[in-house]
Image (cartoon, rainbow, N blue to C red):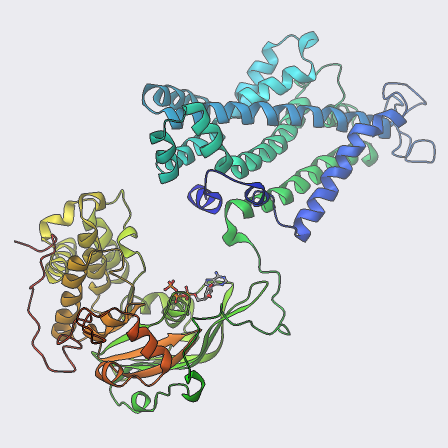
Length: 630
Ligand SMILES: Nc1ncnc2c1ncn2[C@@H]1O[C@H](COP(=O)(O)OP(=O)(O)OP(=O)(O)O)[C@@H](O)[C@H]1O
């Protein structure tokens, strides 16, 4: 995954510890891969020094393995073990040379082209594409066949394989370079006047090293296999010993028909084992490119979960306050969602107990604010409610029940995959953190919205879909004419509104909004928040609104749950939290927002909090965001 490769290793200038991050972490897979590859490599390097002449004729031939000939002899009486040692060396030479040449060629055409752009990129790209569409094996056969037999040494074969094998890697590297060249640190280096070669070698290349290493390994595997294929067809290196030529002679000598397994099995096995070893190493390199692939090393149940990082120090009296309970909410008869005793643990080397025994309930049409410092577990809780958490996150206990308006209770943690797919978005939708970047940049807003309808409501025809998309855009204050726009043609605020519109498309009963306005300026943020309250009032869905901005929640929410180190420590109506915060941490959170008048909370948007619960009138559509129809 190239984009993640860059993110995983991003940061142009690296120290020794940065370079260490480019090395694969130790795993049994890597260990087994290294043992196999090193074993075969040592056999190839040193084996020929200790064996007899592979061409020497020793006996009448086709003798079975014995003390004199560990792997028997060929039809013409040559020692198979000696041939295997020399053949392994020959194949390794070819694999290594092809690996180096193909990687250099792909790096040159991919990285240089991608970085320079313009005509150079177009030319290089065209050339790579042409090389890519020419069918590889026939071209190799033609080129190899064209070279006279006496000139067809192992290095000729290697060059032929390298020339025909670099193009696909070049395309991957080009795409990755195009992405990297727009990163801030590359732009900064450019502005600082660094020369292109330096930017490429210092800023871009280190980020591509894991990818290059992976391509190098893959090129070696492919080369050894292709050489074997060419040799098998009689187009391999002449006068050289490779595993491929061994197979060729075994086939010509009727080894299979004569049941001389010792002739063809060993070279085949070495090829298979070497490919297997390199693939195992490649897996470990993939883990550097994409850290998400790393397997948690400790899945052991006996290892006790560890708490999240220590939260902010509390002032005196913190210990006196009992944890918040949920008695008021669980007895509500109009609940739409009930979470009871939910625990979520990230099963990593040092397990993180990110959500601890959380019990909350969400009333129909209610806006529940979830507040807390960064890292306290808000997002993990939201994901677990919607079953969007992925390993290493695990729900270790607890229940999440959705009370459908039809009267049915749905146990979300028990839904099977298909039911979950149908449930999500239709009944409970989500606006993700950084949602405005969640839109696909190459697909129009219309297609992205219609996709949701096509998936969940296949019975709708295109006119109905269009009408619904226009309707939701209008609801969130974006001109329906924008349907044919692409995301880059919209402002951040408009994109955020589009995401909210998308979450509303199927009329869900609950929307979870994870910091949906954090990246926006306060004016746009304010406009969107007003829209959310207005829409909630009009349409009656419930909202779990997640943010670390407690004053904002006071303004928006009916009730607020304050989270700290994975626990809900206070859970009360917004007004109560504002007037009479019980927990010292909540008081500390409120106090941490500066006052403009000397009174705590004056900075808070007083008078507008929890419009619904206080029965105040909202200013309909008073927002001034650029997304509003004028
Ligand atoms: N993939 C993961 N592996 C291990 N620990 C994780 C992983 N993702 C999150 N955590 C840990 O879980 C805890 C809760 O993280 P979470 O993202 O839920 O916090 P948050 O309150 O949403 O923070 P923010 O407001 O900054 O988004 C943190 O201690 C975090 O380090």
